[in-house]
Length: 289
Image (tube, rainbow, N blue to C red; front, side):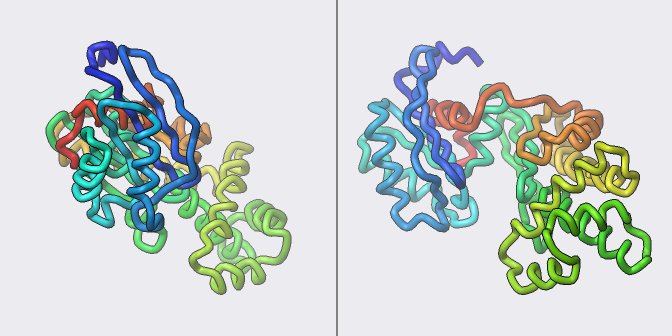
């Protein structure tokens, strides 16, 4: 898309978990504004006030916002109306998966597979939107850092029992946890919502896979296949061989990216989600609201 053709001064807000990034797109020129603290529609009680401050500071003609949790909360349309009235300009609020897709393909159709702590895919064919995955660590998140960490610990425990697994993973997981496997297992069960105890083991697995451990390599290839399956599911549902992008820390690991890209033909995003939010402000992909 030719950004110089977009009308007016557009603000793009990507409200991530750890930070909120803001840009202004005007006459094809992009300017980054100071970052703000992270926001979430489910966890930030004053989210409307905080977004209004950012929109006002941007001195824009229209604003687009990608906000985590808004799809689950179902508050996107309400927030859009409220902020439009309060700001006195058009404001479009949607979930951050939409703005990620719009940024990744410069406003063109495509599918983004994201694999960080969790995993999910979002796709747009130019008319329809669809999502796959994103069901959390208890019921899904295949190929994510949590999935990898759990697989690493399972292989370590199997080796400890003499029931297969990987002795190399057993030793690496034990060293990384700074204690014994029983102590780590107890800590995870005592604090089931603290996902970092498990996700911190993902780099242990990918490192061993890169060094050639066959069990670790097999698990990483399985993770890549699971992530590729998300893209395949959306291609089938949207009925089009849409291009694919991959994002997130897990897909920054070559041992996973190489197989994922080989299965999907994936590329890296052309622009970040905050640019996608600015495109949303111009009405691109607004059917997702």
